[in-house]
Image (tube, rainbow, N blue to C red; front, side, top):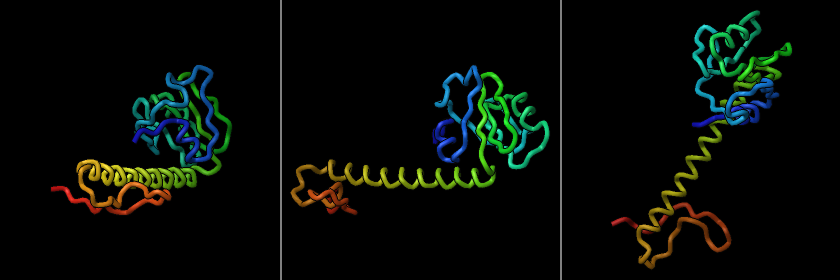
Length: 149
């Protein structure tokens, strides 16, 4: 899944702050990985600080973190980086997980609908009425009666 900074801010309800020289892609910068320990950070990762530990955010930026998610004191992001301030980092992580699960479920339903439509399109000469796609009143059909030979 391609998650970007603006998605992260929207899903967590946090306040996104870009550095005066923002990441190259700005709010559309992609998130590669979220880590919970500054010692595990690789370049481009996001450091999610669950509990305040002095120096962890600075260490994360020094090790190449694209940004940090934190609560508490105000932090100025380093050049090319961002900060996302949330009220509660653990609750924000729950919001992110639930939001991503919801997006995944919506995507799966959409994929299922596309497969239904593809099945009907494969047999356009079949005169049996399809039960996929949408009826005249806009209701979504659940299955397709057409069979693939």
